[in-house]
Length: 423
Image (cartoon, rainbow, N blue to C red; front, side):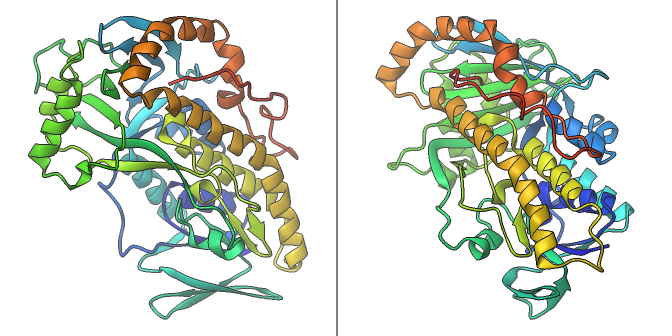
């Protein structure tokens, strides 16, 4: 078995550790921060292709018990309350599993707990400083003065990846999308019954006059919401005090014919607005004994709804590529050939998802004049899109990675169509 050093203990890093262990290797995870990140972060949605990958890791059933099912999306105009169109969020797997919305902390906790249960070590306070490659392996040096040796090293260290700069110093910077991300959860019973005006598990997405936003209700009656205000150079709402931030957000929704302003006002803790980036392409994902997974290689905007799911796909594909490599023959050439197979299977699909997510974000970037024009045409655009929804989006949601086969299936047989936008 190979000793595998994984930099980063987020979703991508922990999933990769589980996959490498399944492949017969010994992963150790190194996290820059000093402790676990329980309770940190907002919420996300795991799509059905993500659950399909989790099934390979033996975690689909446990993950399907977190959060709540969100299989449907409905879109509306905030200015009039007019219904535009309904979508399915990827449909369902053969066993009925659908997309689910859950807190990032829940997902992280599941992966960390399972990694620990399976004997995978996670070390904290290990911020990577440098990597030295030798004929026999790699040595990672950390800011605390310690080091670790392994046969290979995996960068799962996110959008601002240190490992990426070591693999390709000329990598482009992350690409900005002029939208902010914020959101929150309203406890059950806080607001009058029925004010959310949506079925449990139905994402109600609104093209508002001044902001795009979404709200949904879970089976327990809590209201989950997120918003994507335009990011303007003239203002920085992340610096506002909590009460002022709430007033600012509610003001963006107050002119719409929706309950969103009241939902924002009733939210006890609002996520501080943060900027949106994606990472479309880099010259290479691997060099020698180092390789990238997750956002370190290809970060899609939140509008893709695919961040966690793509990380799970990466993890499974990399673990499969490294099967059968023993410590007796872990030459750089053997390992790099496995990395080449992994990148060859993942790059085209990952870059297509990133661009798809960017297209999804485009309708949310609306000034006043653009909004008036788009409000007139959105209904026909979405109606045309929905007629071909299955054809358009199967390449995203029906991707399957066969652990025992030489290549994944789903994406190779389908070229992603350039068909506009889906929220």
